[in-house]
Structures are given as C-alpha cells and as structure tokens.
Image (cartoon, helix red, strand yellow):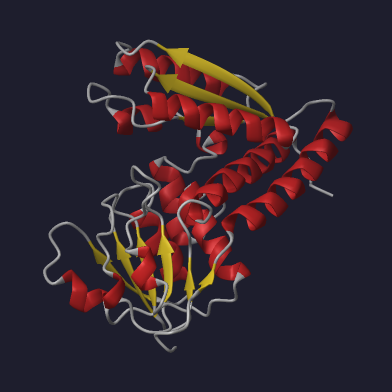
Length: 288
C-alpha cells in the first residue's frame, strides 16, 4: 500500500446494527413461541459515571432488540460476599437468562470471585473461567464479548488469518488473552505483548494483524504498522483516543477500526446476541 493511500475503515457501527436486528428477530421469535422474553440482568457496584453510562447504553440497546433488562444497583461499599450473594441469586432466577457484572467494581472487590458466582449458562459476557476454557477448547459456551466482536469484524471484512502473524498487545483476562485464543483457533500465529515486552515496535512491525488492547493512548505508533496490515484498536481512552496512533496508521494499514465506531458497538452486539442464545438454550427451543 502506498503511503499516500488510506486504509479502509472497519465499520463496527453498521455491522453491530445488523447483528442487533438479527437478535431482535430471534428475541421476538422466542417470545412468540414461549411467552417469555429474553432477560439480561446488569449489576453495578457504586456510581462510577462511565459505568453508569455504559449500563444505560446497554439497557437502551436491550430495549431496541426486544430484550428485557433488569438493573441492580449496589452501594459502593458492597462487599465481595454481598456481591456474590446477588449474583448467585440471579443465577438461580429462572426469569433471568443472562448476567452482566459491570466492571471495574472497585479495588475492594475480588472480581474473579464475583465473576465465578455467575452460572456459566448465564455468563453472556464471557467472564468466567469455564467460559474461557470452553472458548479455548472450541467447546459450546459464551465468548468474551469484545474478542467475539473483533472476530466478527475480521470475518465480515474477509480477513484471512490462516498462517498470518497476529500480535496482541494486552493480556487482560477478558480481552487480550481470549482474543489471542480465538485468533489461534483460526490458525493465526499469535504473539502476546504487554507492558514488559522488550522492543515492542520491532514486534509490531512484523504483524499482519495488530490487536491493540492495553488501554494506553497511542501506544502503538503508526509508523510501526506493516504496510497492508489489519489494525484492530480495542482501546478507548479519554478524548475518543484509541491505543493506536490512528492518523499515521491510516496511511499504512489496509484495514483499521476507528475509535469510536469500531470495536465498541460490536461488544454490545455480541452481548445481546449471546443473551438471546442463552434464553433459547434455557427455554429449550431452537431458533427458527
């Protein structure tokens, strides 16, 4: 690709919209056949403004897709044990088909213990160890939503992964690690990088696919992007800034996700699709 050309933007907003329309049709079918609408319960500890906004946005998307939403707000001082009790109760509630624990929950909460209180069949956010294991082994289960959204974007834009070098910058349990496993399942050769990686630039320069998921603005330099590479920016930092130096990367990549409008909408779309799937599974029906 010539440096005077610009990459094609990977439009997550449009693809997510189509996915939500499909989820709405499936949800309506479930409601018609069973008299029960799919239901997603969201649990929020405290009143962090960003988390409150995210929860409201997810509730609005649920309504658009014909999915009932139940919001549980807990005080900031809620203990891990109290949070586990709430999540266990939702796991046992037959009227709830999916559970989303909005994170971060606060430094005093053992998030891993809280996540593990979610029944795997209701883990539509793909945060439990069982979901990670099932995803890694290619078994039935729910994948982490952002990695799932990334893979759907790559598929929609016909990105060939077989034999390609994919560099994942970030190693979180719900983004970096699972997206690497999903790429590996598509026969990509996967390299994980992180805050202690030596000479990150030289590794990125070799990548056919770059997934930036570290939460540090413009960490990935545009000039390090291999000409013709595919760039997935899963970072979201203040000022609508991603983890990739977008303007420079735009002149080198073949495909790139914008921030916002790339990975973010796909995350919610996968969450809703998995909620509908969970409802169908729990109600014992096949989606028509």
